[in-house]
Length: 322
Image (cartoon, rainbow, N blue to C red; front, side, top):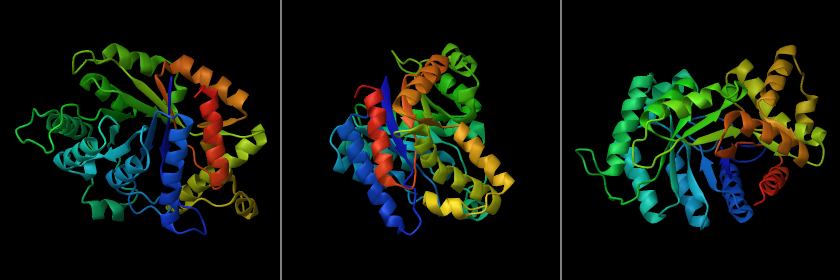
């Protein structure tokens, strides 16, 4: 069972945005030392709480700072880019770091209307997304009319970030899928359907499921739940104010008025994650893996206290025997 991390370069109150990028680099180094399989970064544009808007640049830097761990995107949002440009970027990354680069793709649009205007992107049609993936794959595998450079003998694997539609698309295209959110609470049915509908695009290709969720571990369940609070609070604030803010210290959050709506969103966000002691998290993961049959776990946790976050990552690695 592979274990990986997704880090969104979350900004933190009272710190410059650049600090978030340095914290991502440090976390990647620690993840490699702990034995993690992959370390992925994400694409978010003009979001106050996230410092990373250019995954290829961050991936290249992380790959230079590490030597073994796979590095990739979770993911590149294809509606924002021409497939040939994405193919060139990841072909270059793979050429410079052979066998270590992953290309996760999604179809989310910008967070707000002004961001979508700036990106010149206002549509994320499922059919267009499928066509973009096929075009991207053609460039990477050397089957398109245009030959992307550098040419690769082994292109980086493509992962589809899957909603329900995404899972169906991944099965049809014969690609691995990354699943997070409410689908994880729907039992085995969507995962069984993905495997049943999987059509190998290349000889030997098999269904591959990565489940993604926030996982936080501490000495006690109460402490782990405290670590969940900054991310859940940011989600609650964003739902009310329309802007996803930097992470705040727990003590400061406790001083803020907790409206009924914010409390509901905080509780809903916490339900979608896994927090507790090592034993509690191990039990929760066992149930999740039994219902999904996943091949890999991708933790996407974040919290204000970076030392606590790094310690949680180390504890999670111990659960997997890394």
